[in-house]
Length: 167
Image 1: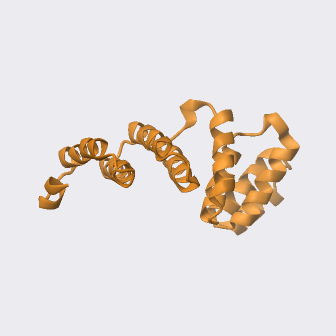
Image 2 (image 1 turned 120 degrees about the horizontal axis):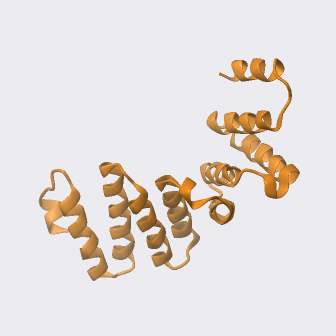
Protein backbone atom coordinates (compact mmCIF):
# COMPACT_ATOMS: atom_id res chain seq x y z
CA UNK A 1 0.00 0.00 0.00
CA UNK A 2 2.86 2.38 0.74
CA UNK A 3 4.25 1.90 -2.76
CA UNK A 4 0.87 2.73 -4.29
CA UNK A 5 0.57 5.87 -2.19
CA UNK A 6 4.06 6.96 -3.22
CA UNK A 7 3.22 6.38 -6.88
CA UNK A 8 -0.01 8.33 -6.54
CA UNK A 9 1.75 11.24 -4.86
CA UNK A 10 4.52 11.23 -7.45
CA UNK A 11 2.04 11.32 -10.37
CA UNK A 12 -0.34 13.94 -9.05
CA UNK A 13 -0.05 17.63 -8.38
CA UNK A 14 1.27 18.44 -4.90
CA UNK A 15 -1.43 19.40 -2.43
CA UNK A 16 -2.16 19.76 1.24
CA UNK A 17 -4.35 16.66 1.01
CA UNK A 18 -1.21 14.65 0.18
CA UNK A 19 0.25 15.59 3.55
CA UNK A 20 -2.93 14.41 5.26
CA UNK A 21 -2.84 11.12 3.33
CA UNK A 22 0.81 10.57 4.22
CA UNK A 23 0.09 11.29 7.90
CA UNK A 24 -2.85 8.88 7.88
CA UNK A 25 -0.68 6.23 6.21
CA UNK A 26 2.03 6.61 8.85
CA UNK A 27 -0.55 6.14 11.60
CA UNK A 28 -2.22 3.19 9.86
CA UNK A 29 1.13 1.43 9.55
CA UNK A 30 1.92 1.98 13.24
CA UNK A 31 4.74 4.44 12.53
CA UNK A 32 3.49 6.50 15.45
CA UNK A 33 6.49 8.77 16.00
CA UNK A 34 6.52 9.72 12.32
CA UNK A 35 2.74 10.18 12.28
CA UNK A 36 2.94 12.49 15.30
CA UNK A 37 5.69 14.54 13.65
CA UNK A 38 3.79 14.79 10.37
CA UNK A 39 0.57 15.79 12.15
CA UNK A 40 2.43 18.34 14.26
CA UNK A 41 3.97 19.84 11.13
CA UNK A 42 0.51 20.15 9.57
CA UNK A 43 -0.89 21.77 12.71
CA UNK A 44 2.00 24.24 12.77
CA UNK A 45 1.66 25.14 9.09
CA UNK A 46 -2.14 25.23 8.97
CA UNK A 47 -2.92 26.84 12.33
CA UNK A 48 -6.66 27.20 12.83
CA UNK A 49 -7.38 25.81 9.36
CA UNK A 50 -6.07 22.36 10.30
CA UNK A 51 -8.47 19.43 10.38
CA UNK A 52 -9.16 18.71 14.07
CA UNK A 53 -8.92 14.98 13.46
CA UNK A 54 -5.15 15.39 13.53
CA UNK A 55 -5.35 16.01 17.28
CA UNK A 56 -7.15 12.69 17.56
CA UNK A 57 -4.50 10.98 15.42
CA UNK A 58 -1.81 12.36 17.73
CA UNK A 59 -3.75 11.23 20.80
CA UNK A 60 -4.20 7.68 19.50
CA UNK A 61 -0.53 7.57 18.50
CA UNK A 62 0.63 8.85 21.90
CA UNK A 63 -1.66 6.34 23.63
CA UNK A 64 -0.11 3.55 21.55
CA UNK A 65 3.31 4.79 22.68
CA UNK A 66 2.09 4.72 26.32
CA UNK A 67 2.29 8.51 26.72
CA UNK A 68 -1.13 8.99 28.30
CA UNK A 69 -0.43 12.52 29.59
CA UNK A 70 0.29 13.88 26.11
CA UNK A 71 -2.50 11.77 24.62
CA UNK A 72 -4.98 13.30 27.08
CA UNK A 73 -3.92 16.83 26.09
CA UNK A 74 -4.37 16.00 22.40
CA UNK A 75 -7.81 14.48 22.98
CA UNK A 76 -8.84 17.58 24.91
CA UNK A 77 -7.84 19.67 21.89
CA UNK A 78 -9.73 17.31 19.59
CA UNK A 79 -12.92 17.65 21.65
CA UNK A 80 -12.46 21.42 21.76
CA UNK A 81 -12.04 21.90 17.99
CA UNK A 82 -13.96 19.04 16.34
CA UNK A 83 -17.65 19.27 15.52
CA UNK A 84 -19.48 17.00 17.97
CA UNK A 85 -21.31 15.29 15.10
CA UNK A 86 -17.96 13.73 14.16
CA UNK A 87 -17.34 12.07 17.54
CA UNK A 88 -17.51 8.27 17.70
CA UNK A 89 -17.82 5.93 20.67
CA UNK A 90 -14.10 5.03 20.51
CA UNK A 91 -13.17 8.70 20.96
CA UNK A 92 -15.13 8.88 24.20
CA UNK A 93 -13.72 5.54 25.31
CA UNK A 94 -10.14 6.66 24.70
CA UNK A 95 -10.83 9.86 26.61
CA UNK A 96 -12.33 7.86 29.49
CA UNK A 97 -9.32 5.56 29.66
CA UNK A 98 -6.91 8.49 29.53
CA UNK A 99 -8.79 10.32 32.28
CA UNK A 100 -8.84 7.11 34.36
CA UNK A 101 -5.06 6.73 33.93
CA UNK A 102 -4.44 10.37 34.84
CA UNK A 103 -5.36 9.78 38.47
CA UNK A 104 -8.05 12.47 38.63
CA UNK A 105 -11.44 11.77 40.17
CA UNK A 106 -12.59 8.50 38.65
CA UNK A 107 -16.14 9.77 38.30
CA UNK A 108 -14.77 12.01 35.52
CA UNK A 109 -13.79 8.83 33.67
CA UNK A 110 -17.30 7.46 34.25
CA UNK A 111 -18.79 10.52 32.51
CA UNK A 112 -16.71 9.75 29.42
CA UNK A 113 -17.55 6.04 29.55
CA UNK A 114 -21.25 6.95 29.70
CA UNK A 115 -20.83 9.15 26.60
CA UNK A 116 -19.11 6.22 24.86
CA UNK A 117 -21.94 3.94 25.89
CA UNK A 118 -24.54 6.35 24.51
CA UNK A 119 -22.70 6.47 21.17
CA UNK A 120 -22.00 2.72 20.96
CA UNK A 121 -24.17 0.61 18.69
CA UNK A 122 -22.57 -2.81 19.20
CA UNK A 123 -23.97 -4.86 22.07
CA UNK A 124 -20.64 -6.53 22.91
CA UNK A 125 -18.84 -3.20 23.07
CA UNK A 126 -21.65 -1.69 25.15
CA UNK A 127 -21.31 -4.55 27.61
CA UNK A 128 -17.56 -3.95 27.83
CA UNK A 129 -18.17 -0.27 28.63
CA UNK A 130 -20.71 -1.19 31.33
CA UNK A 131 -18.14 -3.52 32.89
CA UNK A 132 -15.59 -0.70 32.95
CA UNK A 133 -18.08 1.64 34.64
CA UNK A 134 -18.98 -1.01 37.23
CA UNK A 135 -15.27 -1.63 37.84
CA UNK A 136 -14.59 2.04 38.49
CA UNK A 137 -17.44 2.22 40.99
CA UNK A 138 -16.22 -0.98 42.67
CA UNK A 139 -12.69 0.41 42.95
CA UNK A 140 -14.08 3.67 44.39
CA UNK A 141 -16.12 1.74 46.98
CA UNK A 142 -19.40 3.04 45.59
CA UNK A 143 -21.28 -0.24 45.95
CA UNK A 144 -24.75 1.16 45.17
CA UNK A 145 -23.59 2.69 41.89
CA UNK A 146 -21.73 -0.50 41.08
CA UNK A 147 -24.89 -2.53 41.75
CA UNK A 148 -26.89 -0.41 39.30
CA UNK A 149 -24.37 -1.13 36.56
CA UNK A 150 -24.05 -4.81 37.48
CA UNK A 151 -27.84 -5.05 37.07
CA UNK A 152 -27.58 -3.42 33.63
CA UNK A 153 -24.86 -5.91 32.68
CA UNK A 154 -27.09 -8.79 33.79
CA UNK A 155 -30.04 -7.42 31.81
CA UNK A 156 -28.07 -6.77 28.63
CA UNK A 157 -25.83 -9.83 28.61
CA UNK A 158 -26.99 -12.40 26.10
CA UNK A 159 -26.40 -15.42 28.35
CA UNK A 160 -25.86 -14.27 31.94
CA UNK A 161 -24.42 -16.84 34.31
CA UNK A 162 -24.37 -17.40 38.07
CA UNK A 163 -21.36 -15.12 38.52
CA UNK A 164 -23.24 -12.29 36.80
CA UNK A 165 -26.17 -12.90 39.13
CA UNK A 166 -23.85 -12.92 42.15
CA UNK A 167 -22.22 -9.67 41.09
